[in-house]
Structures are given as structure tokens and as C-alpha cells.
Image (tube, rainbow, N blue to C red; front, side, top):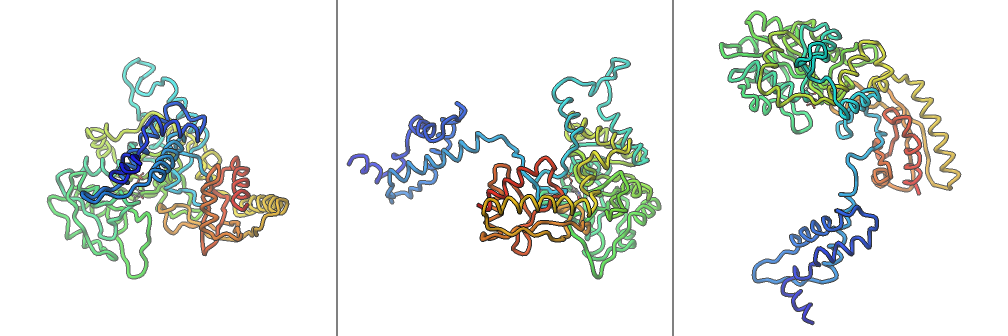
Amino acid sequence: MDLNENVNSDPRRALPSVTRLATDLSENMPHLPSWIPATAAQLAIEAVRSEIELPPGAPKKGDLSVIKARCLELAMDSATRLKADWPRKVINATGVTLHTNLGRAPLALGAVEAASAAGLGYTNLELDLETGGRGDRLASVREKLCLLAKAEDAYACNNNAAAVLLALNSLAAGRQVLVSRGELVEIGGSFRVPEIMKKAGVELVEVGSTNRTHPHDFEQAIGPKTALLLKVHRSNFQQTGFVTEVSLGELVRMGQRHGVPVMEDLGSGSLLDLSRLGVPSESFVPSRLELGPDLVCFSGDKLFGGPQAGLILGKKDSVELMKKNPLARALRLDKMALAALDFTLSRMLDGSAEREIPVLRQIFLSASEHEARTQRFADVLTDAIDQQGLEAVVRQKKETVPVGGGSLPGFDIHSCVLTIQSERSAEDLAARLRGASVPILPRIREGRVMIDLRAVLPADETDLQEGLLDSLR
Ligand SMILES: *Cc1c(COP(=O)(O)O)cnc(C)c1O
């Protein structure tokens, strides 16, 4: 047959037309928004065309029906993807409060409302209502940050990586920054201290060794080109054994002797003292500032519990240099994040943060409350499993769970989880849970699927239960 002859010599001829494939797609997936079928068909045809390899002089055999089926398959994948809103809501059943892949800190309802009001309408973002003149978009946030941290001055930008970049560039461009070799950290693959230094236009001077850095290592490295002594928190690992580091206090004293500013990149910081909960004491920003560094910076969406932001506190001179830097404009916060940040700061000032801020609520949750909630959920789930004749065993188990996935090493909470055992392997069950109508992310440990309710919002318990039951069917 002519067609097959052609296909055998060049399988690309078997590719359907965009119109033909779009029609097939619409028949297979009715109710698609009208822009999708042709777009998805085009994407699929291009993808299949590049899948069909044709080494010169060696025509491959192409099968018309295989190619057609492949086009339809890819078009359906594309349509499913294009139709979906993103990001999708998921249920965090890992117990990890600050889960980077799941968007870090969930925001307080009030913070979301403030952001949405700022986004929906017009606000006095940069307007002084008294004079009618130009206002400062950071004025309110700056004042509240200073009040909470008892700091001289404050600044806020897009995220903590931006804070570090801006501070380095403002204080030390073209000059040297000294950092311990034990603190040249990488955070989540894309933030690496040596690389951010290069981009900031500063020269990195490594001091000491991987496991041990002494004050005299810094003393020896300080010279006329030294612009800054930097301390970086090891946010995602701990060093134990034969180790020594230079404390922030020691660094500050050295900086004062040599007239060199000192900065700490804290990563995870809080303006509330959470040490009674077992949160590492160095996370309390005001106590870091008392040691006298010029700047301390940390993330808004880690332990602080607010929107993505880089928060910087410290001496007026240093903050002023950052404010005046042309880079500041490129790294500034948008109005919605600022509104959410301002709400979060106000709750810290009025004492309602422990109730209102989800991150703090999750950390403050008592073991007995958590166990009682877990037991109630387990009872309902077990009843449903029995009623529906499913084969699964649900057990309550004590577990330690990290608060931050890579943001607070050594800070684990004694939690309690439900282990789910069925005929399916843990990987299979976890994959089914991810495929639930509201995807569920469990914790997997020792080959078992575990559900921790700590980071599950109360309103999501019904979806969690339904997803679990579906995955066991
Ligand atoms: C998390 C972290 C950063 C990056 O902060 P982002 O807010 O994600 O940009 C930088 N430094 C340290 C020490 C961190 O822990």
C-alpha cells in the first residue's frame, strides 16, 4: 500500500495533522477548554517527531498505528497538564513543618487575607496619606522588625539568598570576605556560599579547615583588603567529633579590634524566644544581635513563619549601604509579600503569634494534644477500613520528626505517627497516595508508610482519610 510504503521510508509521514489529532483528543477528553486541543496536539506532534530517529541512509520502519497512538497519548498528557491549575494543594503528612519541596511555611489566614487585599485593590504602598507625598514601602515592616528585635535598623528583600547577595555586594564589593572553611555551605543545591560571593563581586578568603577554625586563623587572614567577616549557619548538617568553630561573639570582638564589620547568615531565625521548646538557641535573632554583629539575616518562610522574604537586622550604617545599592530594587519584596509580612510581625507584637502563625502552632502543639488527635483519626480510619472490608493495619507509634527539612539540623520533635501496613509495598502505597485527588505526602521510614498529622491542616482531615482509603482499595 502506498501509505505503508511511505511510512517505511519516512515514518514522520505517519504523523497526523494538528486538526486530526486535536479532534481525536477532544473525542477522548470531552469538556477541555477550547484553547487546549490544538495546542496539546501541536506539542504532541512535535515531541513524537523528535522521537522518531532517522539516521541518514538507514530509514527505520514506522508503524502507522503505533505512531498515531503515541501522538494521542502525548496529547492527552499535555492536555491534562495544561488544564490543571498550579500549584496543586497537597496534604503534608510527613510531619515536617518546614518542608522546602512543599512550599516551606504555610501562612496564617490573616496573612493570606492581607496579601489578597493588597493584591486585589490599591493601597498606600508607597504613599504618605498625611502629606500626599511619596511614602516608604518598607517603613512599617522596618519599624516592627526593629521593635521586635531591639535592632537599630532593618531591611527586607525577596529572600534570604537575596539578603546575603545584597549585603555582600553593599559592604564588600571588590574586597575580601573571610569565611570559615567549615561554613562554605550549600543549601538546596542552588545556594552555595562560594558562588554567591562570586556573584556579589567579593573575593572569598577561606579560613581554617573543614572541621576546625580558630580565632587566630581569622586574625592571620585579616588584611587591608578585608571588608567583612562572615558567619554562615550550617542549616542542613551538623559537625560532630574533632571540631571547633569561632563563635559570633569572638568574631565580633575581632572585627571591632580591626575595624571590620561582621555579618551572620542565620538561615532560620525567629524573633520569638522558642528555646523552651527545644529550638536551637542561636535561632533567636535578638540574642544574636546582642552579641554585636553589624548584620544578621534570615529567611521569612522558615522558622519565622511568614512569607518568602529575606530579613536583615543590624546597624544603621550597614543597612543604609544596602538600601542605597541599585541591586536593592532588583531584589525588593512585592506588595503581597509585604502585606503578609506586616501581618506576621503585628501578631508577634500583640502576642497572638503562637495561636495565629501555623509554623508556631505546629511547634507549640503539645505531645498530649497531638496524640489525642492522632488517636481520634486512627479510630475513625480503622472503623472505615473494617466497614469497607479493606486489608490494612493502622498502628500508632512514637517517632522523632525534624521540624525543618534542611533548615534546623538537630531540632527534632517527639511526635506520634500512624503506620499503615497493607499488602502493597511502601513505595506502591506512597505512589497511590500521591495520586489521590488531593495528593498526600507521607513519611516513609524503615519500609513503612507513616502518617503524621502535625502538619496536616484540620480542614484537610477528611481528604486525608478519603485518600488513604482509596489508596488501600
Ligand atoms: C535557607 C538558607 C538560605 C537561603 O534562604 P532563602 O530564603 O531560601 O533564599 C541562605 N543561607 C542559609 C544559612 C540558609 O539556611
